[in-house]
Length: 179
Image (tube, rainbow, N blue to C red):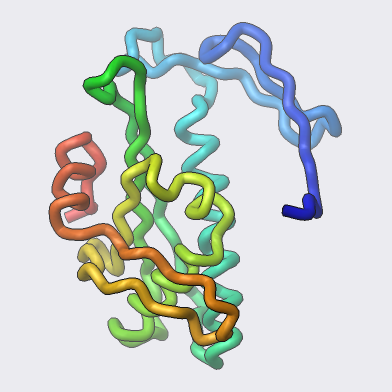
């Protein structure tokens, strides 16, 4: 991979500390949620930061795919939920739900754009096979699809979207679908 951009961040004090980027553009206090044994506090946490980053990146991929297909994704939003819990194998893992609200898109086009964005997004590529990700449109889980070669013809395969069983596992992790 040819790296196009690199950022750097320094954290002191772990989940209950302070984090900042070397350029000073992000400077945050961190607090451990009560659900994880902390005091709550007014600071943010790694899961919130990941949720914002993933949603922003994913939405950019979706908007790019929409533009390429001449679809109107204006006024669309991505709601990202990130859950954390024990893996059952020692350690902790994440579960993610990405939900598109696309008022100017048909259901078919919205699902297609979600799959395309999931194939494009670096966060999706980094987490694939390691983090359960449920793709949704207006709260409804996308149906499982077979592997397909993308329309760009470069042979990059799009992976299966979350199946109903994966979505159920994510829902049991405490991430809700908003209904």
